[in-house]
Image 1 (cartoon, rainbow, N blue to C red):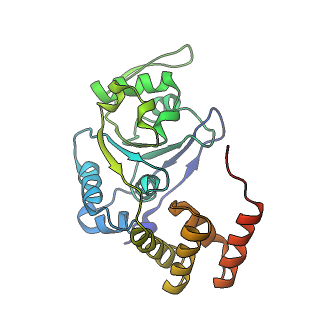
Image 2: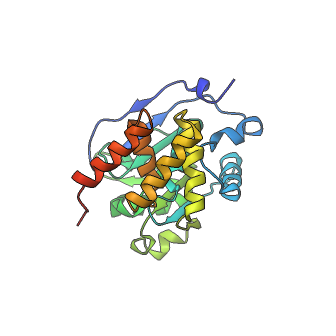
Length: 252
C-alpha cells in the first residue's frame, strides 16, 4: 500500500495567533519499504534524506534545523514529512492558528513537531520548547494551561535568519545549511518537481525553470511551483511570467 493511500485523516485548526497547525493521524509507515517515497519530490540532498529517515526511525529525541536562504527546499522537507509520517504537527508562521503550547498540551500523541521559520515563533513558546528539547518534559504554567509531563517529541524546523535564534536554542539542534542553487541544480529540481508532482512534460518543466531563473531573476523553487499550479501549457507560462513582471511589485 502506498503512502498516500494510508492517509487516515486531516485536522486543520482555526485561526488564533500567528501560526497554522495541522495534525495528521496516519497509520505508521514501514520505513524500510517506503523511505524513498517520503522525499520523492526533493531532488538530490541524499545525505539529508537519510539523516531525516534515521531520525524518524530512531527512539531517541533528535532535533534537526535546516538553515539557509529562502527557496532552497527547506520547507519541502517538512511538507514531505507532514504528508507521509504519522502523528505530525506542522506549524507555519505565515498563517494563524492554535499556538504550539496549546497543541502540545492538548495532543500528547504528537511525535513530530514541524516548524517553518522557527525565528518567528513567540519567545514564550520558544522557552517551553527549550525545556522540552533539553529534558523531554512539557512544562506549561499558564492560567488556562498547567502541565508537567513527559512528552518525547522530535522537532524538525527551518530558519531563514539563524542569527535571530538564541545560542541556547541553536545548540539544541543538529544544524544543516542549504546553499543557494546553481542554474544546473535549479533546472534539475524544477524538472523533478514539475514532471512528478504536476505530471507535466520535461520540456514544459525546462521552459518554466528558465523563465523563472532568467525572466523573474529568481532562485526560489517555490516560484516554479506557483507557476506550475496555474499553467496548463507552455503558452500559459509566458502569459503568467509576463503578468508577474507587469503587475508584480518588489517587497520593501
